[in-house]
Amino acid sequence: MKKILKYVLLFALAAVLVYFAFRKVEWRAFVDGLAQTRWFWVVVFCIISATALLLRTVRWKEMLIPFDPEIKTIRVWDAINVGNLASVALPSSGEFLRCGYVTSKKLEYDKSIGTMFCERLWDLFALIVMAIISLFTGWDRFGSYFMDNIINPLSANRIFWVVLISSIIILAVAIYAIFRFRDRYVICRKIAESLSRIWAGLTVFRKSRNKLLIALTTVLIWTLYVLMCFCVIKAMPALDGLDMIDALFFSMVGNVASIVPVPGSVGAYHYLVASAVGVYGYNWDTGILYATLNHEIHAVIVIVIGLVAYLHWMRDMGTQSNSVNNP
Image: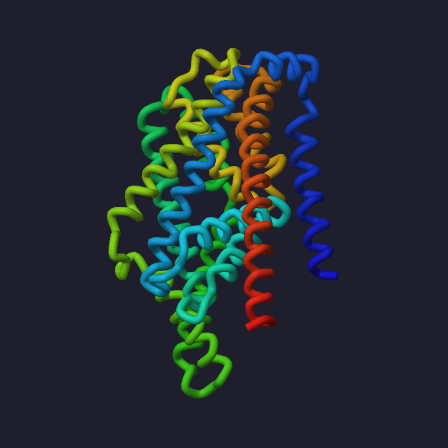
């Protein structure tokens, strides 16, 4: 019942955000804009999106190799894409699913979780760098949006900071207590061992044979994200006046929007990105069309590739089962 309630609440939140994002749309103008789309750039978008997924596979595999040197690229590819497919329905669920998929005798689940956190730290660092670059190069264009929608709300929201700081303190005290009493209580020892394995995965970068590859793939992944936004800009005649700096800004806003815990970021992404497009003086219909093209095309790619990866995984499971039953 708790899981059902959680799903219902998440989808309800998504529905509310979709309503607020689309309530001001003039559908005739929206359809007219869609009809003018330059589909060549949509094809380029799809190629770049698939390439970004491939680079994520290369990066994560490099992080997993210190624990399982024999892990196959196709296994990591399937894990990432089946995980992405799951996250479309339930936010972040795919992250833990993919970690379970690559688990083996050599690679424990806790360690794979740690490598996933290591990946997210690299992505967070890249997002911060992206934000700094975009604000430095385009403050005159969208500095007001950044101040009004991010800085001012955060600085004025005391409850957010109280909850965040309190959570950090409670977590730190809990971890200290677990390690302090691990020799006295079995439960503390088991949790401490699990946290140690997670830490081993989180700090895997130190053990990596090719640190440069991890750094380089991170740069390429986030560069491709910006290029995806640029492709959507080029696909829309109404946005012909925008350039790569604007694509960088849209990419930053879109990645921040993806943090909102609703299925597939539906609604949250559309609302925030459409608002970002509106900073340039474009009407809401144009902003929604841009957000919809960017989000939905990427979602279709994730779903299609995820389904193929899932079918491949099912076939492998069937093959393994037959080999066990028929030695």
